[in-house]
Image 1 (cartoon, rainbow, N blue to C red):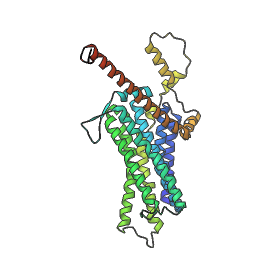
Image 2 (cartoon, rainbow, N blue to C red):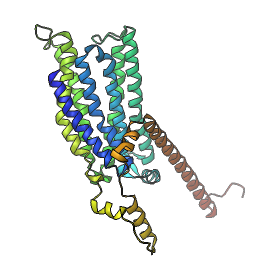
Image 3 (cartoon, rainbow, N blue to C red):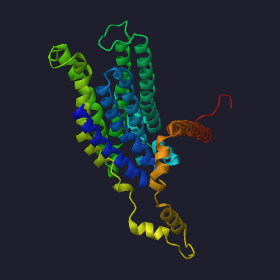
Length: 361
């Protein structure tokens, strides 16, 4: 408890400091709100793990929700990568419609970029949905005495919830990796590898440690004795390792998601905030430059309160999901109409040149 508590205090100080800097330096809300949701995974893991150590009986009720926070962070990470590729919905449609990607299991065959985006989006979105369902199911079956954490018998829910969560995690993580492999060449300036590494290390190490502790318990390397209790072996040690490892991982996250790319220089803010005399615009380019300059300001509000409100609003995440679904649906409908029009134009061209003359004409 002492070791884990000290690590928790360090992690909370560092992560909420980073999130606070993004909130007060919010020049790009679309990206920075997503970054705050990604960073939130670390304190969520930390706090739930520390509570499980202090109150072991709460572990079964809380453990499933760590996966929910992880799923939300993974979805936010995918949307952040999409924002790196194209800032607006119109830009995303144009970019992915013009793109072709390799199929994972059939590299020689190509997949349309929009179909690739849709497949990746659904593969990642299912993760927070499935983990939310399994987390609630874990609480309900525990209350009904049908969960049984220490058993893998099929008539208990533990084995089935574990399998469902593992499959969902595998599908989502594989989709993210494939998305990065296909898109990394288009966003080198955003350092996606560092951001992916910071995220993957957290998820990968937690999964690896769960497997390691299962092996140690299976070969009786960890047994109940005068020093270790059953709760220590099953809950205390694994959760303490998570609390300790989050400290060095936190520094990697601080570097990968730093606020420097979003900070506005004092000179730019002074120019923006000072009143300016009227000047005639000589071209559309001058108008765009003036609008861009006027928009370079922090939008988080006083002490970042507007940013924190947007981050904490659960409806904001739901609206983001709905907006992404509408964007993909409209893009696919537009692409379908374009294909139909191209086919009609080709048929007309063939008919006019005499290559497609109806019989009996």
